[in-house]
Image 1 (cartoon, rainbow, N blue to C red):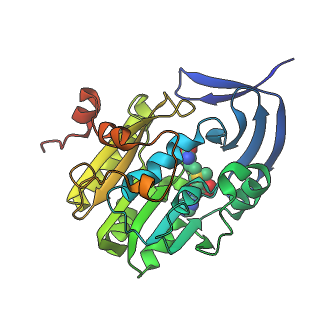
Image 2 (image 1 turned 135 degrees about the vertical axis):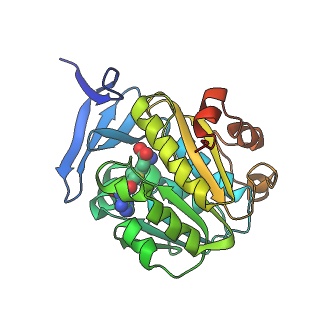
Length: 284
Ligand code: SAM
């Protein structure tokens, strides 16, 4: 009989993938992790029953998370990644020779260890000499951090379970404090389609926009995330992602991308009216 992985996208909508084998599953001290092999999507892994990354489309999420800020400030040198234990964001960052130091703060060491074993597509750069791995809660890490970062990447799970603190006002305040004056914060920003993720999208944006002079949201099409319509946040103290966009940054470094390009960059910030309205400042 066929075996199906099923994830609830909302109370009334589910997403299912037929899989050939469950490669491995474990309950870590923080969450449940499982790796599956499927014909259609290749290898994929889940945390607490939620799809994190699959071989077929993980490049969309990771390219959009990294190449957008790198095309606004190409001389980014010091990077902090919060979450992202699968290594996909780090993989994209390592393609830039100008990046000297990447600190990855992942709450769950088992995500790193198991992705290295079962998901090499994203995790292969995690032992690079430029990467420092820290196993800690990202919110606690930034609360105590004093270093200045050029880029902070919040590659988190949804705001339930261990990821909750990474959507709090205190967390964004600490990120603002430790970001260099030309620094950029990017974060996974949920989806506008279903009520629960739409609520989180609005709440995250309100908090970020109250702290950062530049707070923009951009979108990508990621078929295996709820609704496929997924958002990212771009915040900075000065740099605007469209006005300050520099074309050709990847060409100069001979970086080939499968999803990201200059036209996608500009277009990603053009939001549909209903998303714009949901994110517009509310009159009190
Ligand atoms: N692309 C993914 C998505 O949205 O489906 C996110 C990928 S990544 C695997 C998310 C990582 O954030 C997980 O490995 C999880 O352990 C980590 N994480 C969750 N809460 C965290 C926290 N408070 N501090 C640091 N890492 C955290």
